[in-house]
Length: 510
Image (cartoon, rainbow, N blue to C red):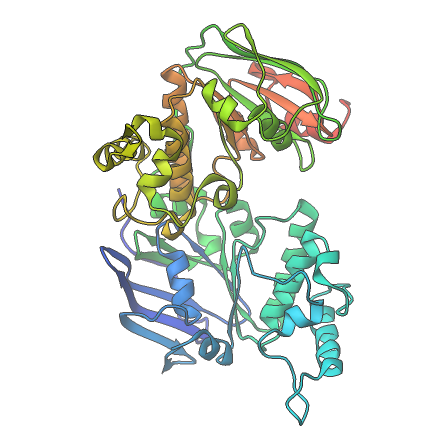
C-alpha cells in the first residue's frame, strides 16, 4: 500500500535555488505530472527516485524548457519564472547532463562544449582562441585532463562523458541535473564522477541526481524526493531513510519482493554448446541448459558475455563450436535461423537493437511473428492487436494504448515491449542480456516475476547480468566469464557474492 505523502525536511536549510510547486503536465490520455513539488538547494544533491513512468523524465523536461507545464509554478530564488524554450532555462542557469547526451565526433572537444553559444569576435565570427581557452578552464575545473583541440572521436567513453559534463557547465549553471550519469561508466570512472559531484557541491551548485542504483543514491545524495505515477509522494533527508523506506514509497513493496520465491522445476537438457569459439571475442565455451532453468552469466566489462550471446543468436559467426538443440546439431548463422530453431535474444541496448522506436507498440510486438497475424500476404490488424495485447498484458506494460510509439515509453516499458516481442514467437530458449539495466526497481520486480513464470512454464532462460543481487536472486546456476573464457560454474552454497567477484576478477583463493 502506498505510504502517505511524507516530508521530513526541516526549515533550517535556507531557501531553495529552484522549486516546483503544484506542477502538472498532461498528454493525450496520460497525466504525466499531477501537482508535483520539488526543491533543490545550493551545495546539496537531491536524488529524484521513482519507477519508470513516475514522471522523472517529464519533470526534467519541464525544468529545462523542453515541455511547458499545464499548471503550477517554477520558482528561482523565490521568484516565479517561465522557461518557454530550452535557451531560456539555460540562461537562467539550469542545465542537464543526460544519460545519452548528443555529441559530435567530428568536432573538437572545445567545439562540442560551446556548440550553440560559442564566444564571438567583434565581427560576429567564432573566436576560436577564446573558445579553446574557456574550454581549458572548464575542463580544469572538473579535473579533466583533456586537450580541447582534439577531435571527440579520438576520446574514450569516459572522457566523452566528461566533455558532456563540461558542455553542461559551460553556461555557468546554478542548477545541474544529472540523469543516470553513471550508466555507461566503469567503477573507476564512477568514483571520479562522485569526486566531480563533490566539487560542484563545493561551488554551491544545486544538483538533481536521477539514478536507479540505490548504492549511488545513498552514497552521493543529501536529500531525496519520491514520485509515483506522476505524483509527489515524499521528500526528506537521505540520512533519515533506508532502502526499504524508499522502495515502499516508490512501489509499495519491500526490497525482499524484488526477487520472487520460485521452486525450480528443471527438466531434460534443451541446449548444449561445445567448444564454441570466436577469433577475437571468446574461446572454448562449453555448457548445457535444461528445460525450466535460469542460467546466469556473470563477468566484468570485457568478459565476452554479450559477444558470445550475439554469436549464439547468429549475429556474428563463430570460428568453431557445436550447438545442439534437443539433441540435434544446429547450424545457426543468422538471427532468422536462431528464431526458426526457437532461440531468441533480448539485447542490452534495447533502444538501438531491441525495438523500432518510431513504430507503435503493437507493431513492435508482432514484427517477428507476422506469419501468425497475416493471411495470404495481408496483415490482419485485429489479430496483431490481440497478439500484442496477450503478451504485453502478461508483462504489465504501462502505456496509454497499444498505438503509442515505443519511443515515447519509459525505459522499463520499452524493455517489456522487447521481451513481449520475442515471447510472441513462442521460443524454447530466451537470452536476456542485462534485462533490467537502466530500469526502475518496480519494473525490475515485474521482469523478475515474469522470468520466474517463464521458467515455471518450461522455457529455458539464459540471463546475462552485471548485478550480483540479480544473479544471486534469479539464477539456478551461474557461469562466470573472464577475458572471453569460462572460469567457473557455480551453484548452491558455492554461489556467493565473494566467489563471483573472485572468479570474475581473477583473484585467487586465500
